[in-house]
Amino acid sequence: MFNGEIVLAVAELLAGLGAFLLGFNLLSGSMTKLAGGGLKNMLGKTVHSPLKGVGIGALSTAVMQSSSITTVMFVGFVNAGIMTLPQATALIMGSNIGSTITAQIAALQSIDIMSYLMLLACVGAFMNLFAKREKFKTLGLALGGLGLIFVGMWMMEGSMEIFKDDPFFQTAITSVTNPVLLLLIGAAVTALFQSSGAVTSIVISIAAAGITIGNGGNSVLFVIMGSNIGTCVTALLSAIGATANGKRASIIHLMFNTFGAVLFTVVLLIWKNFFEVTFQRWFTLPATQIAMFHTFFNVICTAIFLPFINVFVKISECVIKDKKPASSVAESDFMDERLLNTPTVALAQLSNEAVIVARKAFENLSTSFEKFLELDDSTANDIGDKTIEVEQTIGAMVNYLVKISSRNIGQHEEELINVMHHNLNDILRVNAFADNFVKYTAKSIKEDLTYSDNVKAQLRDMFDNITKLFELSVTVLNDSEHVQMDKVDEYEDKIDRNKNQLIDGHIERLNQGICQPACSGIFINLVSNLERAGDHLTYIAHSFDEINGKVNA
Image 1 (cartoon, one colour):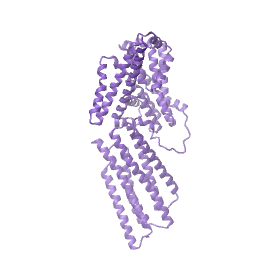
Image 2 (image 1 turned 30 degrees about the vertical axis):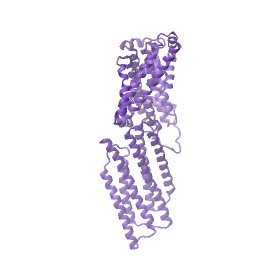
Image 3 (image 1 turned 120 degrees about the vertical axis):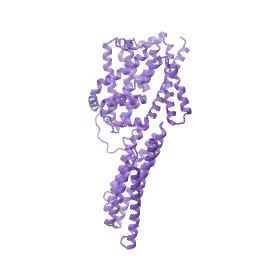
Image 4 (image 1 turned 180 degrees about the horizontal axis):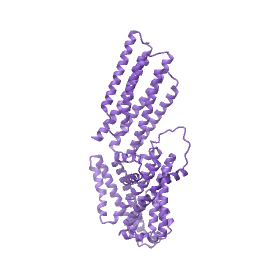
């Protein structure tokens, strides 16, 4: 064989691998984007049934075409404390089953319809080019990515044909016969590509070209099992900087795949002709045989280890010890960068954080309001620290929104991000009013100003309406259903009437000489701040109600 032919074959192999990886990423990203709210609802819920968790893990990975992405997401969920380790373990087991669909797709290269499947690249490109609706454009990208996968597979298989009769290559690929070494090679190459699907597809291309790996028999199966171990590297890297439970989730992923590989290695070493008497007899094409084993391996491992979820959790707790809680956390675990690969899910978790920070802001407002009525400034410093904490959290949330917006997102996600930017500002304004109330309290004490019980009762009535409006408005932050906007508007009207009555009453008392003139500035500003707080809460309810209306229309 001429050296030039070898160079061309290697170039074709690398080009095919590039097309495969590009198509794989395009398909994964587009399917994640298409899944949208369905993916958010499926993954955002905690799962109490291990079997259901396996199903959800398998389905989500099959849709997203990447066990690495879904496992990293599960680490993020555990890190945020919204999913327990046993729940995440079931999902991780399921994701391993879902990841095998890539090998099943790759096995289609051995069927005569390969040329037609490659046409999907052209169909998808034209769909994305000419479609007007975003969903059809994204679907076009998904089909184009699938087509590129088949193009890559076809090129890789073709590049292998030239090596089939080459003595040097045959010697090189058949010289490694040690099962442990084959296992390690599969793990190392997968860790390099960070995709078990890519490695499995390359192995399938080699087999489809009629080239034998190792000394035949079960040799190729050790490489496939090693790829399952190698895919854990992505989750392990993502766990750096995570909480103890986040790290444990990645350790469980590694343990599950390693224990399964060790168990099957023992079986295959004892049962020398396992592959020959099973999959090679059941299926005609080598590509299909390997793909089916990959699925079989993960299904059997899940069936064996599923009853021992709590054992995996206990082992992970022994490996990763609990750390002493930090004195303060600069940024919420809801804003986990592991979730940025799935913007829809990241936005859903940020909505949970928005509810938390909104309640903190309103708690600051409520506390400072009560302290004003009591003319008590003993907690002024504490309220000041809490308002600063809310400001810092909102600043971190704005930065996180910017990171989400830089990802591949759809129009609905863009609208959500815009709405959240506006409403974080509304929450910030409500929080700022608390700081104003502290200043009003300090000035009232300094100038020995007093307010009648009747006025305090009216102010409390106004704040009671604001509290009810807040509870209605905060619901829309993480609820896809319509809020009762008639109730929102009703409470806003009540707050406006409260303001007018309080100010009119104050002016009347001034004219009668009942009220101290020095109270005017503070009192009118206080009432105006309360009314503006109601306005900001109304803006939140209306803006989210509008965008939810577009989705449900």
